[in-house]
Amino acid sequence: GIQVEQSPPDLILQEGANSTLRCNFSDSVNNLQWFHQNPWGQLINLFYIPSGTKQNGRLSATTVATERYSLLYISSSQTTDSGVYFCAVATDSWGKLQFGAGTQVVVTP
Amino acid sequence: DAMVIQNPRYQVTQFGKPVTLSCSQTLNHNVMYWYQQKSSQAPKLLFHYYDKDFNNEADTPDNFQSRRPNTSFCFLDIRSPGLGDAAMYLCATSGRWLNEQYFGPGTRLTVT
Image (cartoon, rainbow over all chains, first blue to last red; front, side):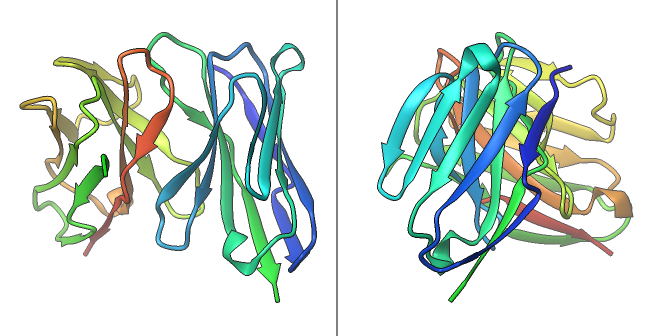
């Protein structure tokens, strides 16, 4: 099956800092999503981005499908950005998501 | 607002006592998925429905069953929960074209 690797595994930021999270995948995908899992466990949709670039407020994402990676940018980080960020991809006709191991982000005041 | 709802949010059951988790959606989506997420791990797909068609992952234990009586509702039945089944259970939906998935808030299951 497809391999999904996220880096770094852990990230500690001071409030106001910028950061980049990376997701590498081993095969062509027809779906790629970024999620933020909050402390209560809910997965919040950040981006549906199988290719191209999108921006939503302080967050933006870029997927280069031909090179099999995606980047999530967090600018001017806030303490509410803390949590685990997951990249998930699908390769089949059923849209079944394969998740990476996640990046644990801690933003300190 | 259209959404995915899971009940209960927290469930405690005893070892071997059957338990049912529920998921409902107001998005009118064709596809519903169940994922299991153990502590400090990524979510892992258990099975999914495309309309009434059920699709089981090869490594999903037989102890896990699912029902989808109509478009809006889907249930996860754990017939004889073991301590290893303690996890967060996440329901998700997606539309006919199988693109973006939307997740519910999850049910955290404890087995005593």
